[in-house]
Length: 435
Image (cartoon, rainbow, N blue to C red; front, side, top):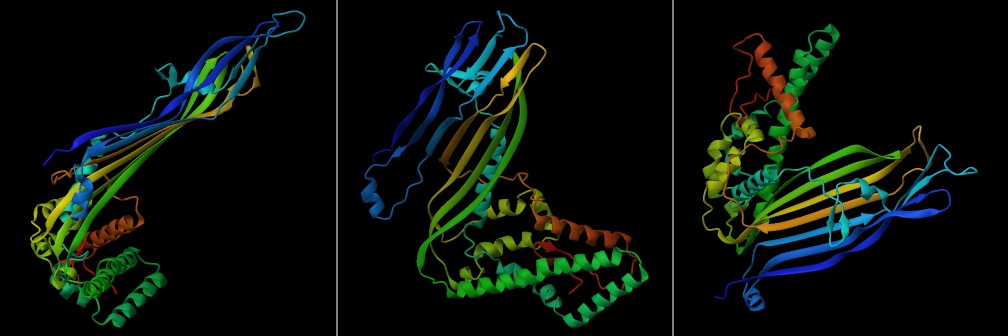
């Protein structure tokens, strides 16, 4: 077979925008300096030409060749600034004046000159090592999900069914007892511990008992409706992060020019696998072989807490084989967008020069890079985002903390009814004491 050939395509170019600096000395303005600011958009793409592409695609063949696409766009918001000397230098009553015409901000940034054009810099905030780590994390997550056949693991649900059913044991009586306890504590203005324990227990019971049970039922109903013939199945995983900064700047040239530099650096990573697979009804409802092999880790007490910080569960799942799944191809795509925006914030005078027209205008550079590459091998690593900025994860953490505080400060009682049990993933081993 003829090997694929690399192909490079480019389009667009930067055009020059004039930026001028004038000085008025007694009689008239004279040009004191001038340069060309590069504005516009340039794009570049490197990929591979597949031999006999149309005929091979018509036969059902798919391609996940390496690709890199980049673009740089520079936008000028113009600008103007003018100042004059306080002291009279020309008779009878004229001052020395200076003025910028055009994008004066570009004169004060650490630019580079390309083809005679001044090009402003890009200010990247995210490190390449962090991007590489997240790419490996997303690849591992995708490979862990591949081969499961369903969003739910019914083996885990069956293994923990005894505790889920126990939640509905005499629910009205439990609800009545809970409400009486809250009212009693309120009347006595007593310790808040029991109230916190009741609220946290109710929250955990809903989050990791009732809601997963409803989700399992919906997954089963959906799986029973799905067909079992051979078809193509796509498995996906994605993640991303963004960093933002804002910096006030100032430059002195006769007067003090003020500006602000805002930077947004964002990365989105997606991994996918395309497979030919004949899913059975058991696969569709979450009783796949891969789910069976990975359920021991799911049942480890409080293993979900470790999975918040380290991708242990995904790492194990990624190495578990996916029998009868015929992979047609896979890839991971990294998209990065970085924007630097310089905005004029005015000018301030001093004892020697006064401001006639404060600095105005803006300058923006945006760089985009999209790369498609092979999926990384499974990696065991610390997760990039613990997601404690999410309300749900914060609620989980506080509910867990309340349960642990109860275990530490509560008086020991053999009949308290708070035996650990194995729990309902993700909160394994938690006493679901309230409903």
